[in-house]
Amino acid sequence: MEVFSVKGLKKSFQKNFYSPKQLVLKGFDFSIKAGSITGFLGANGAGKTTTMKCMLGLVFPDEGEFNYFGEPALNSNIKKKLGFLPERPYFYQYLTGHEFLVFYGSLTGGMTKKLLKSRADDLLKKMGLWGARDKALRDYSKGMLQKVGLAQALIHEPELVVLDEPMSGLDPDGRKAMKDIILEVSSQGTAIFFSSHLLNDVEKLCKELVILKEGALMYQGETSKLLNSLDGSVSLEDYFVKDIL
Amino acid sequence: MRSIWVIAVNTYQEIIRDRILYGLLVFALLLIGLSLALGSLSFAEQERISVNFGFAAIHISSVFIAIFLGSTLVAREIDKQTVLTLLVRPISRTQFLMGKYLGLLFVILTTMLGLGIVLTVVALNLGSELNFMYGIGLFGIVLEAMVILAIAMFFSTFTKPVLVVSFTIGLFLIGHWVENLRFIIGKSESALVKSVGGFMAAGFIDLEKFNWRSLFVYSETISAKYVISSTIYAGGWMFLCITVASLILSKRDFV
Image (cartoon, rainbow over all chains, first blue to last red; front, side, top):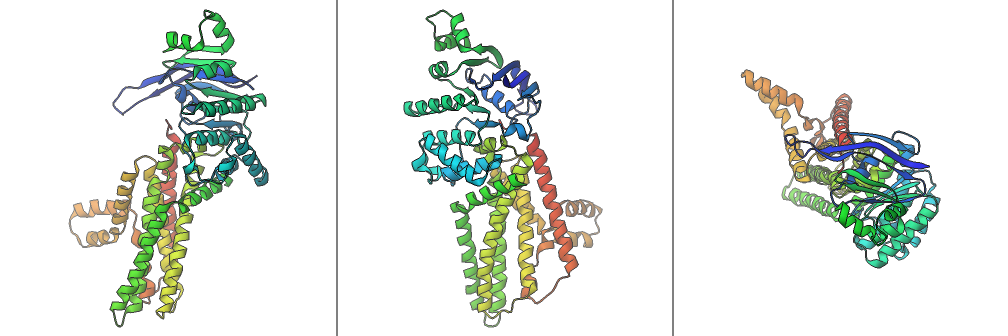
């Protein structure tokens, strides 16, 4: 079963009124399966972030037929099923980690205050941030911000989580923690769709891949199928350097 | 409605913990202190000068908060991309805007309440007998701050904070000058002055409609009808600014 699909996604941008429109997403289809971990790959400027923002209603596509959990439009009920962590997240500096999570949970609704607070505490423990529960976010390190950002994407128990470069800038420990959390969340039935340049991590984590090149789809399907179609000694990284960059 | 409230409370919390607000508050308290010093220079008019200057201090500080914090209210969310994680939640862009507006409005009301209490203590100490017009004077300041904040928010949906501050200060100055413009138009015989001036007088907000700060000091009164019509006038401008800001935001791509 698919939790998301789009057909013919197109988006163009215009720098100024007088400059010509530049087509950055050239009309492609892809889908995300329920409970899957799908890696979203492409070189810088391939259109990954724009695609994610089109999915989430932050950027309006020129064309595209969307389907979210069987519905064609991104309404409030659908939004309750989505979680998102943007690239280089910046959050409210003066909120503590706990206040921050409760705030995002309250925005989604559907949980009592008591339940929300206990869920926020559980997530802080799971992310290894329990000691920083009452610290203001301005005192968090980059890795801690990335983790609390992931926690805000999960606070309302979404069915599809979109993560834009969740592991960028993290040290090996932080990356391992992030991977463990992604695996755990996925094992509970949540679909994860994430972009990354860390191909070794993607190869290990993702059963499914979506690969973009200059705004066009290069591949959508199982990671193992892609790797089998290549020469046995070729890794995802080798394929990427040779064919995608 | 719940989403608006959640965003408003968060905005309030953020600003209350920000040091910028305290800088503005210290500035306002110094102005009230200065009003006492200025009042003491006069032998007969100490109470009148001090209270008048105290009203001016509250007016200036509330407008400063509305302009300087209002200018970054939405722009900072867009610039720092916190807006992305908010709008992915089940809230509309209009609700986001309303929440931000209400949050800062609560901050303005809180600071005005604090400064109002300080001024009241000063006035009572100087022997003032407070009456209804004292409250009306403060209410006028609230109305003006609400409108200025809505204007700052409108500009902040499409331009940078520096320009928001410039445009809003410009409209604030023009707003206090519109009454004089009407006077000039009335006296002028030039068709050009009448048409251009008339257009400007109709198109810009008249902030003098909320200037009731001197009523208490000079023992004057104002009709309830005028207060109500001015409140509706302020409401109309707020509605216009927030509606247009919401329309602009609803079309915007957050790249």
